Length: 147
Image (cartoon, rainbow, N blue to C red; front, side, top):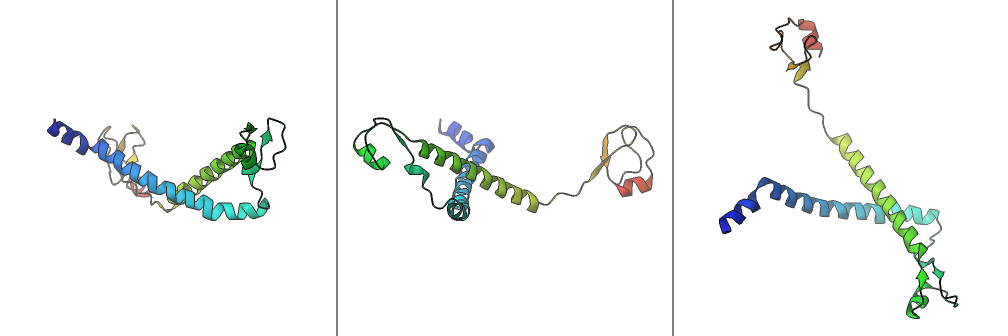
C-alpha cells in the first residue's frame, strides 16, 4: 500500500497539481494586493469614499441608521450594498488578472520557427529543406530562406 501511495504521490500529474495550487495561492495574493493597494485607492477618490457596505433596506420598517444597529436588533435587512461591493470587487479582480496576464504575454518570448509548410503538399518540413521529404518536390532556395 505504501509503494502504491508513493507511486501516486510522485506521479507527474499530482506534482503538477501541487505546484499549480501553490503558484495559484501566491498569484491570488498578488491579485489581491493589486486590487486593494493599486486599483481601489484611486477608485475611492473618484466615488468620494462612499462605503457600499452600509447600503441596506430595513425590512421591518423600524428606524435603524446603520446595518450594525439593525443586525444587533435582529432585524431582517436586504443588504444590497454588500452585493454591489462584491460585484465591484469581482470586476476589479477580473481586471487585475487581465492586466497581469496581458503583461506576462507581452514579455514572453516567441520561439523562432524551425519548420515551414511545403507549398505543394502542405506538410510541415524543416526550414532549411531544399526538397520536401513527403512529396519530393523541389523547393526554391530563396523561398526556404525567406520563410
